[in-house]
Length: 138
Image (cartoon, rainbow, N blue to C red; front, side, top):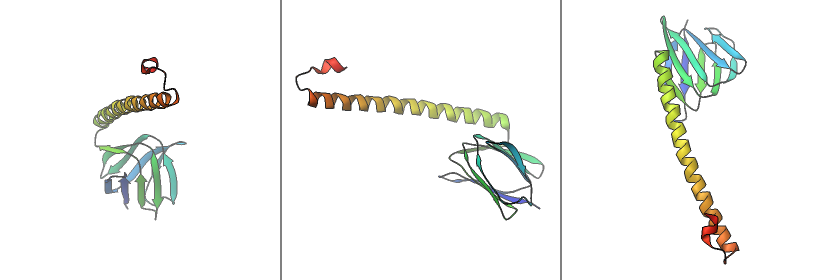
C-alpha cells in the first residue's frame, strides 16, 4: 500500500507523488507516517521532510507549515516555502544560498524603509517648526 504526498506553497505544487513512508518534524519532535495512519494534523517546524519511494529517499526543506493525514493514505503539506532535493548535501547548500539571498534582500528593504521613515520625519518636523534648519535633522 502506498500513500499520496502533496506539498504546496502559495505559488505552486512542489511535490505530488505516491510514496511508501514519510518522516517529518513538529514542535514536539520527529515522527513517521506509514500507510494506514490515523487522521492527523500538526504544525511543522522549519525542517527537512523526508520520504521513501521504491527504496529511494527524497527530501524537502520546509519553512514551517501544516501537515494533515487523511483517509489513511493522503498526506498534504501546506508551507510558505519548500525546496526539494534527492541529496541532503545539495539540498543543504541550496537552502543556505536561498536564505542568504533572502537575508540580503531583507537588509536592502530595511535600509530603504528607514530612509523613507527619516524623510517622513523630516517633513513632519519642517511643518511643525518652519523656522528650524533641515541640517539639524540629518
